[in-house]
Each structure stands twice: as structure tokens, then as C-alpha cells.
Length: 188
Length: 294
Image 1 (cartoon, rainbow over the protein chains, first blue to last red):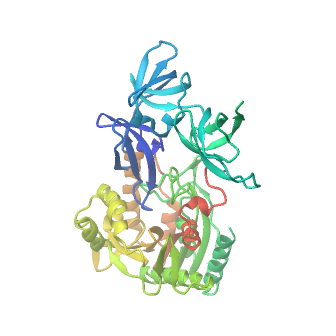
Image 2: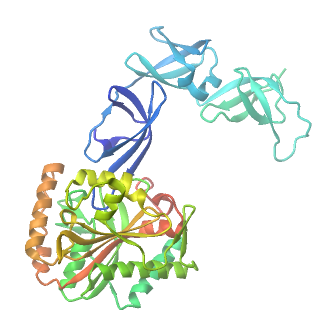
Image 3: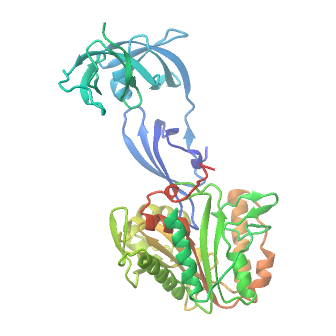
């Protein structure tokens, strides 16, 4: 495709390597050609490179597929997922998951972005319900502006929660930001 | 929004005090200036204006001596932090003036606006104090490229390298605490500017940059009809080759150019000027509705 079609999060093939467009900046000297400055992240090794293109230049867009998968278990620094149609398993390295590893629960249904047979990225549900396993004891009584404190959920993720959250409560967490959303149920 | 309106009001006052006439020219026309790297929107079989230049020069040819205009301009595919496909251009023209006089107009205009906003020759933009006291440093295209990119675009014509090096090397080499006036473009990039009388390798064309923003493009206007026809033909041929688009020759403009007096003119991007005076990092911050909002 023409470079003008490249957007943030486009997936491009450059010299045989797969890149995600992290930033795409359009500049143009008034009477001159458009210049596109891209910040590209290599989807295999995570390295970031800068590339400059001029209008009219072509780039190869990677054709990617998505498929429904389920999270099974963790093995060392690999997180294993399974295609829900053909039961094929895909281990994903921890590095590729980034913050998302904190929200994976066994059996969770996700959408896997595939480049041929290679998993590229995982899209989680927007929120996930997680059980609190540790929480600071709050000394303050509830006030109009809620006091925040640190809690730890079942996946080992440390999160800021309101002071009324107790061990055993289940809370909703936004998987895009990692932030607390609301309390789902209280400990029995 | 309020500051934007004030800026336009102050600009009107600035020109009216100097006896400039405010004019309005058509936004939709059957032919526009063919520019290899400016793609127009088509409107039925006409075009939306990419600049009011040709019509304003026809007014000069008809006898108006000092005119200015705020006009909506449209350029396809131009979208980014500094671009929106529809934007407001301020253009003004003076009979009997060359680009040096026009550059002084730009200096005076910015200085006047700064004074109206109570700024003492210092504009704060993106954390940088920009000293706008006169005169602003001028640098030739040749010097700027030799210093920042190590080659001379006047003796060695390479338009591909020119644009990329401009964005990645030359523009970042400009002093951040002063405006920069880039003058004397290579003859091949003269566009609608005349060549320097005593040196035909360069054109009397200038671009003004402040805080990394490309603000204005000024010319001593080309009034030689033969040369103009030749440049239009070359541009039309290049557009046909590179963009597979057939652009018509602006005949009525060419008929008028024989009566065009010696004159100078400039196009200044109002949205970017507002960015500068509002300390805005993106054109989106100063436009009520961008192409993504309409």
C-alpha cells in the first residue's frame, strides 16, 4: 500500500520483519513532498526503530488474522493459549504480553492476532473480575473522597483500590489501563 | 477560539491601517495553479481552491495595488499535527514590492500581534522563549543545506533528497529561540516566484519558520508570461506522470499576467499562527472542527 495509508497500529513488513506502527507523523514542506516519519516496534524482539518515507513510496502491509483462543496456564515465562476451534496450543512469551499478563485467568477467552502461524498479540476482554488476596489494613474511615490503598489480586498484580476493599472481595479491573473499576462482590 | 478571533481582528486592522483592501475570491474554480505536490479536491469537474493566489493576482492585474484575504483552502491528504485538509490562509500582495519588503511585512505583523497580546518581543512556544525582535535572521537555502545536510541543493538538483533532508536535518537545525527566514530557493523550486535578477540559479522565494512551524511562503511574483507558461507546462506534465491526473492550464490567469505589475506577495497559514500565539502543539487544538470532527 501507499505509505499515506499507514496509521498508528498498522502492521508492516519491512525487510522480512514484522513491525507495529507506534507513531506516524505526517509533515510536509508547503510546496514539497509529504514526509512520513514512523516509529516502528519490531513485534518479535520489541526493538523500536525510526523510518522516514516520502509520499508515493510503498510499504508492505502484513495480512493478519484473528482467532478465538482460551488462556490455559503459565509455564515459566511462557503463557499457553489454545485455539478454541482446533485445540492447537500457542505459548506466548511474557515480554510480548506486557501488562496483560497481570489479568490472565485460567479459561479466559481472548482474541489472538496471528501472522500466519505466529501469534502476534492478544486482546483481552476490556474488564476482568479478580479476587483480592492481600490488602493493606485501612486505618481511615471512609470519607467523601475515597482513600486509596494497595491491594494484591489473585494473579499477583498490585493495584490501587479504595480503602473499603477487603481480602476475599472480587473487583473489576480495566485490562487496558490496569485500573480498579468497581467492587463486584464482597467476601463472605 | 477567542484568541483566534482576536488575531484575525488585529490582522484586519494591521492591513486596513496601511490602506490594504480586503477581498474575496472564489473557492471553486475550473483551473488552479498546477503544483506537483499539492493535490486538489475535485468538485464536479472543477477544483476547490488550494490557494487564492491566481485570482488575487488577477485583481492586481486589474489595477488593485494592495490587497489581502483570509480564505478557506483545501489540500487533499494533508493531515497531521500541523495539517488539516481544509485550513485558513492569509494572503497579501503589494504592487511595486519585492520579497524583501514582504518579509518585513511578516516581521511587522507578528511583532504587532505580539504587542497587542502584551508580549514584549518574546513569544513562549512549547517551553521555549522565542525572541522576535527585528530583524529576523535570514539564511539562504544553500547555506542551510550545506550546514545541516552537507550538500548544495542549488548546484545539485535532487528534489527527493531536498524534502527528506529538510524535515529530518535542516528544519531541526534552525535556532529554536529565534524565527528563521529561509531565502533564495533553487530555481527549480521557484514555483510562482521570479528568479533573482543577478543570479538565475535561485528564486526570490522565502519561507518563514517560528518555533518549528512553517508559517509563511513569500515571493517576488513572476510576471513573465513565457516563463510562467513553461513552468505550468512542466508542472502539468509532472502531475500527469506522478499522480495520473490531468490538470487544465489556468488560461484566464495567463491572459491577465501580461498586465500584472511588478509585485510581491505571501501566503501565511492562519491556523499555525494561532498555534504559535496559543502555545498549541497540534492544529487540532486551535480549529473548532478538524476533518475528524465534521
